[in-house]
Image (tube, rainbow, N blue to C red; front, side):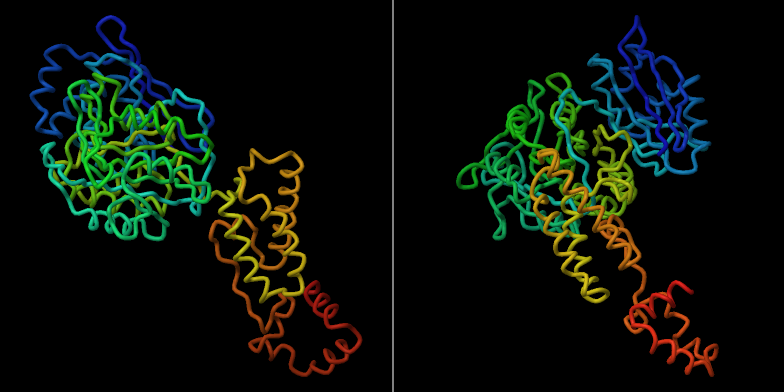
Length: 497
C-alpha cells in the first residue's frame, strides 16, 4: 500500500506548516517532507470567484499547496509508484478560512497538467479524519457485508421547497448495485422491515441477529443557518420529520456493543459534508467519522441530483465487492461520471488510512460469518470425499458452533481456547481431505479438482491415460493387492509415488 499523507498543521504567523509522509509497500520507514501553505485575502477572494469552475478552483488551490518541497515530494512519489498512490488529506488546523475551502476539488500536477485528484485513477483521494472516540470496530470479511438501506421521500416535502422522488425506484437501484450483498430496507415500500424513521434505524442497528456493516441513506438534506445539517426523514403516517445531524449522532452514540454501528455509511443526501457546516459543528460526514469513529463515510459536499447519486452508488458497490477498498471504489465509480457537473460533490471521509474496509488475507483471524460459511462448505465436500470422518467433523463443528453467536472478546478464556483448538483441528482435517486450508475455504477459494474415480493422489498413475506404462504388470498388482488391505495398498501406492 502506497500512501501520501498531507497534514496541514495549525497556523504559525501568516502560514500553515505542511508535513507530508510518503509510505511505500514493503518499506519500514516513510519519507518526510515539509513546507508551508500561504493563502492571502486576495487568494481567498480568487477562490470564491472560481466556485462555479471546479477544475480552475482545484488548480488554484493545488498550486498553493503543491509548491517547492511538497510539489517535488508528490512528483517523486507518483513517479516511483507502480500502483495507485493514495492521497490522504488531514486538516489539523481549525481555522474556518481554511476548513471551509472545497478541498475535494484539489488538483495535483500529473504528467503535463493539473488534474482533479478525485477523478485521477492513479491517486485515490480521501479526507483522513482521526477519531476522538475509543469505540472499536472489529475486523470484517467479505461474508460480513450486510446492508441496511434507508430511503425517505415523505409527503408534503414540498413545503420545505424540496422535490419528491421515486422511493421504489431508488430502493431497487441500490439493491441491484449491492448485488450479492444481503440487504434490508427502511422505506415506504411493500417489502420493507420498517419505516425510514430515526427510531426504526436505531432499533434495527441493534438487532443482534443481523449485523449491518453497511448503511446507505437516500433522502433530502440541507445545511441551515446555524451550520447544522438537517435530514428530512419520516414520522407517523409518512409525514416529514427534520432530523438534525446532532440528534442523529447522539442517538447513534448511545447504541452499545461492537456490532451496533455500521463500518461504512453512504450518505446519498445533499450537503451532508458541506463546507458551510464547518461554521457550526462540521459536516455530518466528518462528524460520523470523528465523533463516532466510523471507519469510512461517503457524503455529498453540495447539492447533487438523485440521478447522479444513484449512478454513483451502482458503480461504487460493484467495485467495493471486488476489492474492499473504499477510496479506489469511489474513484472507479466517479470515472464514469467525469463529465457531469456535480461529479466533484461526493467526498470520502475515512480513518482507514488507505486500508481496505474488509480483507481477504489468509493469515488473519476469521470472523464468525466466515467460519459458519466454511463449515457448511466443508461438510458438503466431506460427504463426497471422506464420509467416514463425518463424526469427527460434527464434533468439531459443534464446538465451533457454540461460539459463533457471540463476540469472541466476550468469551471466557476457556471458551476461547476451545475455539482455537477446534479451529486448528478442523484446519488440519480440511488440509488432509481437500488439500486446502480452512481459512482459504472460508474466504471463497476453490479446492483442487476432485476425481471420485481416483480419489488418492497415489492412484493417479493408474488412470486410463497411463495404462500403457502398466501394460503386462496387471497380475503383479493383483497379487500385491491380495496381500494388503485395500486401505494399506492405497497408502503404500500414495507414499511410493
